[in-house]
Image (cartoon, rainbow, N blue to C red; front, side):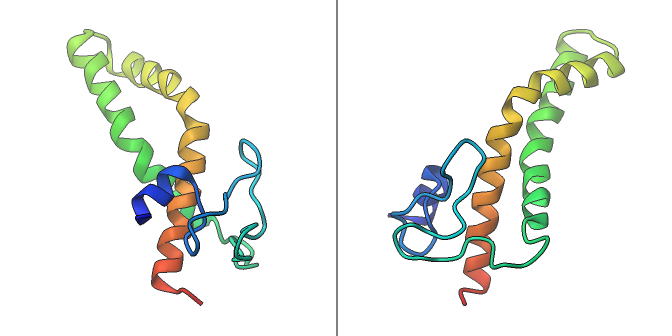
Length: 112
């Protein structure tokens, strides 16, 4: 399985068999299959995932703002508020995906 498939399925970056999440946003501490520690035990480990989440979220929100502003003939402030409200249901998906991407990126650059 490729890394992209593992990311989209939210699987462990080492074995690509064990799930990373045990609930909607609750994560396993380690892979149930191979035992890989997902957070490395460092305080603030997932701060990098916040940057990934930001990078994932800005393009669609900006596109929504532009669509509402230009095509919907909304004011800029109304378009920003409308795009923000329209994107809110997507936030949990972005959080999950950003954590998985962060784990994959981190394990790629520092596998041990």
